[in-house]
Length: 192
Ligand code: CUA
Image (tube, rainbow, N blue to C red; front, side, top):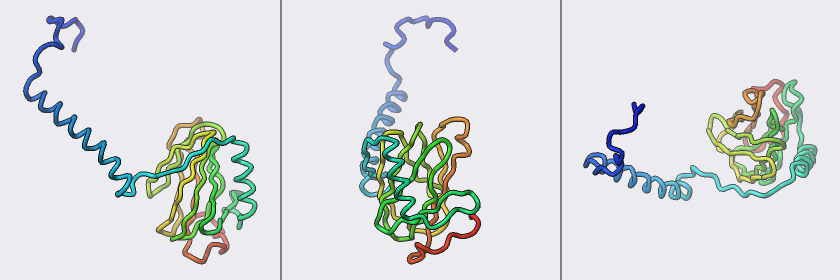
């Protein structure tokens, strides 16, 4: 505890102990190594996303997302009233983040690629896809476009992992991945 001033006012000029110096060198080299590993993982490990990002007016984004959803809507999610939207393989998919929801529910086909657009209408949210643990910051005024290819069918949850207000903990969404060729199949009656 340093409640009083150190006796030796020039404590920071004392020679560094051998063990401590060694530790500083090891930590520095490890930091450098991990820095270059980030670049390596970006290229090789499929760990980091490479999104395109554009400035966007939130109203413009919402208008495009709604027009797109209107076009490819195939039903509603259970009794939630949320539209389920199945975009054509290779096409665009939109996700709107706003307090406190992810809109709409997406239905994608396994093995197909989609250009996923992500933006927020109000404050910063965090897109976290579970259980695959893919994470993207979602900002208002910024549109990210990420090419995604689902490799597994099933129901995936989106949770918000950036504190955004009182309803943060209920801000969840859903992405359904169906087997190839079932893109326009009827939506299951009740959510999984
Ligand atoms: Cu949206 Cu937390």
